[in-house]
Length: 396
Image (cartoon, rainbow, N blue to C red; front, top):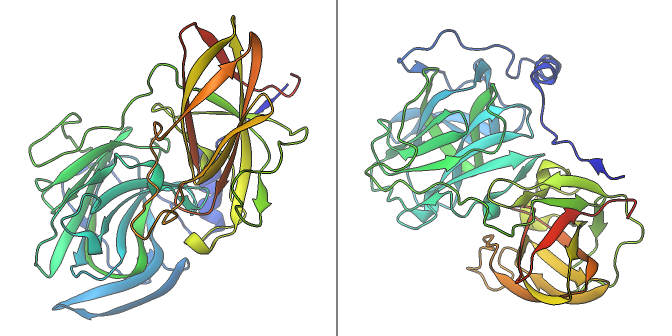
């Protein structure tokens, strides 16, 4: 029988152990809820900079500011629900300024961020989780918002989060352009902090433990819709092989897996399989310079008749698809694979393939290779006559 993969997130008890082991990370919780903002100084007494590539405090645009490259976690503060706001030095240099929240470990946390060089563009604001040390922005194309950062020397990133929802706003009062999104990690207490890719400067970091209240459907000011829900026919569970490295991507993979040890993994509510929920990449942290990691995913499709079905599929970054041992298709949707402006955003309808199903059991296998920015897979089978789909079992 196949085993179920466990989502590699820290349980409350394990989180406490982790907090003790790494010097107070998330080690205590805030007191009773309050509507007041609580400031946290941006210095080494209040923040742990052990995960930062560099940091310094200097005068920036008339303020004393923390200039950070990497991650920094607030010491002794843990929130389940609440609000975080920080002011960001506003210029058009290419950089990404993040707020971290609900960090169970240093490798698993939620983020919301501004792409500072994308003012006025559709992806100026983004939500993404970090799963087992990997960012996943390509898999969350709906969780983006167009926003104009204007010409003020400082702008505010604010995040309100409660339950499985968050609101990400431009402006400290929460009334500016904003998006709402589903969250990915369990709605549990976690550390808060800051993260940058390429150096950014921050001031006036504050938080509130008051439970925020916001309209989860729509508000004035351009709030984006929630992530779409899974459509009929989506594959809801995949079998995953053990991961393995690839030297390079040569197009169609040479061979199917040989007797893999399958484990089962569930998709999200929107039908996407977040592979990094279950598997930690062996090569990470260097973005497009990472080595390729790969995994096989498989399902068994049971059909009462011979028939032709449609498979809508996407994978991040690269994939080869087999049906009953025969190669159907191979593609590369990685970042910049099709030109300097190609983002590789995930779209489960991007590829449409014909499946010639035999009566009885049919085996669909997908090799998914990933370098950076989100390791994922989704498939939807559209048929005239009903079929049943299940993750491949090791005994089958």
